[in-house]
Amino acid sequence: MEKTDIKKVIDSGESCLGIELGSTRIKAVLIGPDFSVYASGEHTWENRLENGIWTYSLDDVWSGLRDAYASLAKEVKEKYDTDIKVLKSAGFSAMMHGYLPFDKDDNLLTPFRTWRNTITAEAAQKLTNLFEFNIPQRWSIAHLYQAVLNDEDHIDKISFITTLAGYVHWKLTGDKVLGVGEASGMFPIDSNICDYDKTMLDKFSSIDKISQMPWNIRDILPKVLIAGDSSSHLTEQGAILLDPTGTLRAGAVVCPPEGDAGTGMVATNSVTPRTGNISAGTSIFSMVVLDKALENVYSKIDMVTTPSGAPVAMVHCNNCTSEIDAWVKIFAEYNKMMGFDISKAKLYDLLYEKALEGDKDCGGIYTYNYLSGEPVTDLDEGRPLMVRLPDAKFNLANFMRTTVFSAMATLKYGNDILHDKENIKIDCLTGHGGLFKTPLVGQKLMAAAMRAPIAVMKTAAEGGAWGIAVLALYAANCQCLDLASFLQEKVFKDAEKTVIDPDIDDIEGFNKYMQNYISGLACEKAATERIR
Image (cartoon, rainbow, N blue to C red; front, side, top):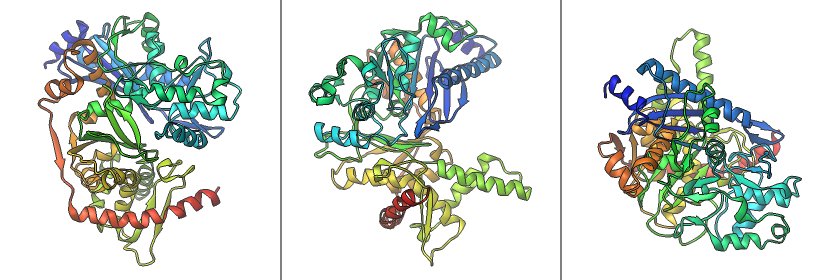
């Protein structure tokens, strides 16, 4: 579209806003009725480890949201010489899981406990046994029950608990709700009714310590909505919270808040059975939409849902690219010292591409990228670690290959269960996130890890902010189609993508690498216990 045409769309209130609060970046995008991105903005932030808890302050949430929106509005002004006054619809998403408990006066009772914390092992295990359903440590219900088991001071004051996405949506619309995909990371969902599992709610309520609480679990959880619901709207207070200049008006439809898993599925057209996606950034997770129920319960696999409620097998790993980023900074520091002028983007590309020159099994070098704990491999803490055999082929290519392998290895460890024990068939997985920015490399090595074709879409580069904007547009206009049909027939009808099939030699090399990698987890465990 021409700039004058885009300006008309914005001025007529037909554009849609999407904002996602990721681990290191809050990104905002404005899209049109044709799903193209008109403008974007972002804000960089970092979690903090305070008193042993990974957290973000609520002040940082709002200053970050405002800054991301302001940078978006600035780009709209610069590109189209207009202001965003009215939106057709909007959507807000964020990192899934975690724990935000509030009292009856809407006061936060504890600092926000993010997905990254591994402090709920006792609660998670007890609930898994009780429900006969895997409850990961990062789930909200595990955090709540652990707080009860710990007899924390705040537990009898709880009136409402939610996630980060749910909190933002609540403050902007007044509605205490969640999209079903996001809700499935709080408490188990029954996909037949697209709501919390009633049997498990009853089991939780019958726990002795829970039955003594002044609240009922049914009353403190957010209401569950499915994709396409248009009952929430941006309030006047919400508009001012987001845009203190007063330019943005109230009234926009606001779609159900979803987590980064749900927006990733939307952004990659991965909501139908035997498809899935892999999000690879600070953390890494895979989502495989199932065409049959799993026969067993696995601690490495979470059962969540798509934004429309279909069952999904999720493997979530706390650590992915942070250790790669740390090494790139070392190489950048060396380049600066030597007087080399190489951009950050170019340096990433060169180092990633070097990994393809390495031995298929990394030549006897093993790295562990665990900056924080990793429940998939039963580690409460992390220590980034490198181990090599005395006769290892220690060169840059093998070092970069093992560094990239380590970002994928824990994900492979979990997904091998689906492949080897459940015989789950996957037609294609779509990758998105920083690991896939360098062409070919992430796709090729991930195809070997997952033993499945890996696709990358041009639109997937927009990530979750674009995904939640698409869900916002769906809520405003297109409920006449189910979500899968809407994505296939409208959003991705002419989508550009590349697909790389797994190479048998790469598969064999990765499998060989994993044998020593898994054995070496004992070294990682020892490092967390001895190095302090």
